[in-house]
Image (spheres, rainbow, N blue to C red):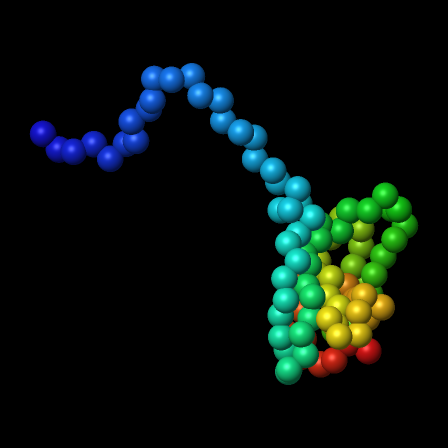
Amino acid sequence: MPRSNRPRRSKGNREEEPLDLTGARLGFKRTEVKRGVAYSVQSTPGNNEDSTKTWTCPHCFIEIRVGTAHVVAWDETRGVETRRHFHTGCWAKFQGPLL
């Protein structure tokens, strides 16, 4: 008889803990190095309470509207004052310094 690869269920009534998806929704902060400069990078869904808020991507200079998923990056040395919003694809191509 062939072996079954299905997991066996336990007979106990064990409750599973709910998943915490907060980090996935807000984006995980990570560090990326481009041309010797360390950047803090965080993905964002682009949702904001202010529906009139828009950003301009410094790579392609096209507007990023509210609700559009994108990347926020800033220079770790100079701090959050250098924070910029990029389209996800534009950040992957970006190689210059944040001005």
